[in-house]
Amino acid sequence: MDTVSLCQSLGIGCLINAGTPRKISNRILAAMPHGVVNVHPGILPEYRGCSAVEWAIYNDSQVGNTAHFMGEGYDTGPIIRTEAYEFARDADYQSIRIHVYRAGCDLAGRALSLIQDTGITPRDATMQDETKASYWDPIPAEKMADQPRDEPSPDCSRRRGHLRPIGSSGHSGAELRRP
Image 1 (tube, rainbow, N blue to C red):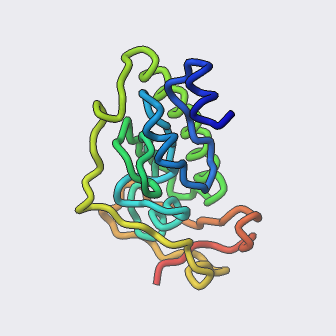
Image 2: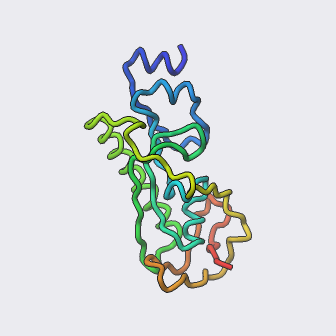
Image 3: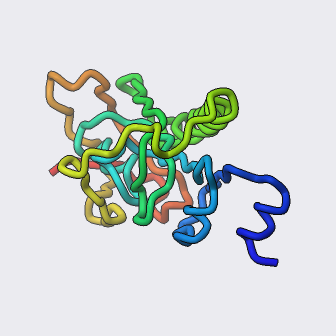
């Protein structure tokens, strides 16, 4: 029995993507009346890609999560809800990432509750503005440095000091640095 047949036999009308880097087939997307929900650690459509948090920090942009119904492309599809977070000036990278992931779990639960309570579908959600869309490649190692990051612009509401990545990034102890 394939995925679509299994979901139909069990009466499943909505799926959640739990962090897989794989695309969901168009057949599965089309078969779910209430969509396939993803929580992307980044503000969509401005920060698509796997290093959205890092690039947002590097660019002094808002850091946040977006709950959306998955589309055919990576990080595409109608938006259910976007949340931006503020961090203390001295927040380190690891605490920012932990906050984003924990808040993303909460957002996933709220998005699924909204779907269950209201019956919204991808047709009811906000389409992404493709004129604002940007895909960001994995942040390159040369953007990582063992020295403090330059201060952000004075108008940045969430200035941070040193931003240290977690060890799994391969840059343990390093900091993000603006040019």
